[in-house]
Length: 157
Ligand code: HEM
Image 1 (cartoon, rainbow, N blue to C red):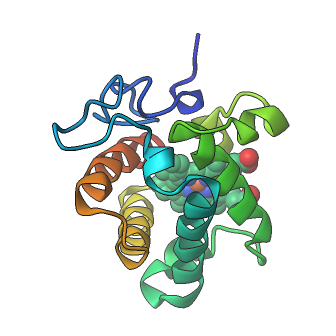
Image 2: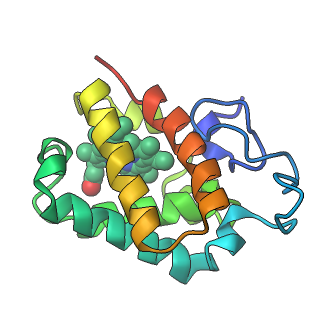
């Protein structure tokens, strides 16, 4: 069966990994265009800007030192992997799966001790990144729920 991490939020709203309620077919809010979160973020360049902002903040902000230290000394590879993953997860091209196969996201996080503090730092960092990148508030709210479901699923202690 599908690991929820392999599906886009739009496709599998109830799963904890890809997350909450982005709707089955882009019908999130009456005012929202019937399109994917990937498209709404501006496609690959928009997703990349969000990922870069996320890791820039993780690098710079003392509040995220706890999760920064779980990562490799250089974040270049982490940036690429999150970008590739999010493109597919948000309803765009499946770059991550093309390169690495099934995401098995929870299993891939098992080497890192992730508890409530780490989950909350990850979420705060991503919410800041969305705000700084000017992600439209209704979309940011939906993505926050979706990210939270996935981040909470990553907890392993
Ligand atoms: C809950 C807090 C989280 C922490 C502390 C965390 C931490 C990490 C760390 C330390 C890595 C390894 C980085 C590397 O190999 O360069 C990683 C990889 C990754 N993370 Fe997270 N992560 C969290 C949540 C998430 C969420 C919510 C997502 C997706 C929405 C995500 C997506 C990924 C992906 C796609 C990879 C690459 C996996 C691989 O191919 O090895 N992470 N994460």
